[in-house]
Length: 108
Image (cartoon, rainbow, N blue to C red; front, side, top):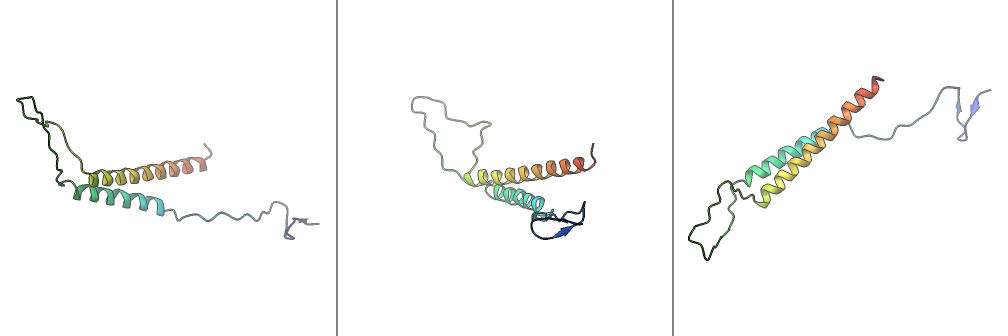
């Protein structure tokens, strides 16, 4: 006699009816990471020449302030760089996940 499960389906021994959860297509995550990197770099590049209003006043010194080796980064550049870094993190996660899955399939 065949085995019966509670749903009334008849399965032979060794046969399973498993459903896989819905997954995103494999190319969505790396494409989203690449888009984030490109958009972040474009935003950072377009805000690179933003003027910043800043005034330094040293009331008791005879030396003017010189900002040698100092760079001011605008908020737009910071946001662009943050988006680019987030995209790089997504790509790093995806690459690690893919490497982990491929090494797990070999059984090594």
